[in-house]
Length: 230
Image (cartoon, rainbow, N blue to C red; front, side, top):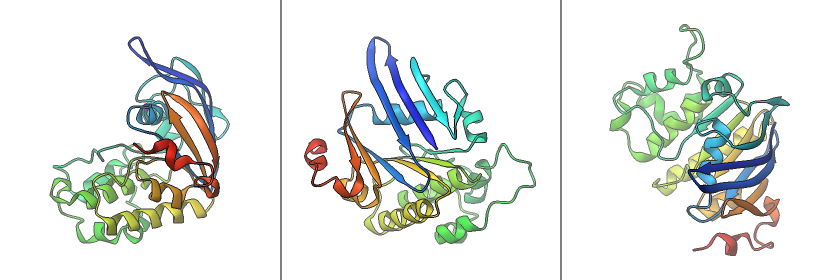
């Protein structure tokens, strides 16, 4: 579903991503691991088109999206849940979810399945996003990204600052979505045990490069935990 080949990206004179290549397949969770500051979030922003890549190619479902702006990537099936959630605090839950359908006709309803995945959002439908707890906001951010039915879901540290019970709920939803086989998921995560439980394949980044990769079931044996421990 997603193929990156030789991605390089710079901030000023700093070389942030160095020849990054990877594939994310339908029905799999691809976990990106690494210490703070190694380029994980920059990688996701490059996938989404928030920051341009200097060289390299990004393909989605065989089509080249390297130079597409973010809104075109959404139209082509990319859903993005940024670090820090970035929901609209003054809009209601209903209105936040509708923003996930912004490029579709105005009569397009919010998919009922989102409330099956995250029942709390149904209960909070008319509450402002800024009044939700951190965990509820994270669920809202994921649901907003899912509203348009993406083929690729990108998640940047969805467990950050979230209580354990909601972390379990989020993990359950990610696994369920992957197991359907109609979506590829790329997950950046600092919480190693959460990542290891979900990973079908993993990569480890250091200084903007991929230094290790493999199947999720082999993460522990291949020393991935030691690579990312602080």
